[in-house]
Length: 180
Image 1 (cartoon, rainbow, N blue to C red):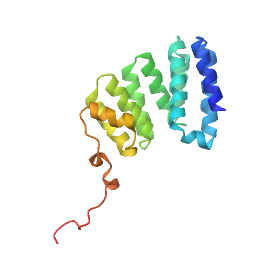
Image 2 (tube, rainbow, N blue to C red; image 1 turned 120 degrees about the vertical axis):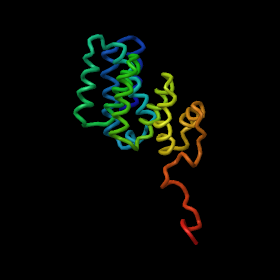
Image 3 (tube, one colour; image 1 turned 90 degrees about the vertical axis):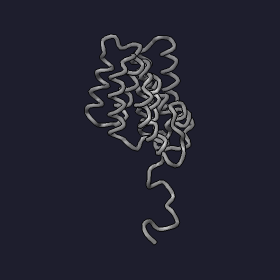
Image 4 (tube, rainbow, N blue to C red; image 1 turned 45 degrees about the horizontal axis):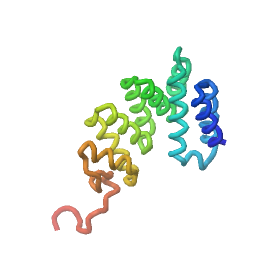
């Protein structure tokens, strides 16, 4: 069960038993991918990935887990591998590698609002507001009710509203276009 694995991983991480934490988080991630409801639970998916990335970043002295995550991502089996790698690099303080991995996650799965949101929030956090605008706009167009995205857009000076949605999502005018 993914929730049990998450709490087990968090307990191990709190005790600085990172190897066990990594294994528990990985089990939780596998269980979540197999469950239909788990695939749709983005909040919990994010908690598992944050936990796993944090444990790897804290423990990975010889880059074994990070290198394995990079190989997984390059194999192209699962788009969330790039997202996990971005989180690992972010926790390690390697902004350039994190940006590259976030970008790849967003390219592989352009309609994933979580990836776009986290990428935009990361860019804003490291002081790159101008670069944060595009992924935050994308996240907003995919999920305009996400309050974190709305607040981040406001902080960088973009007013959220219908104009940020995709053209197709906007209501069409009643009058036909062109001369009448």
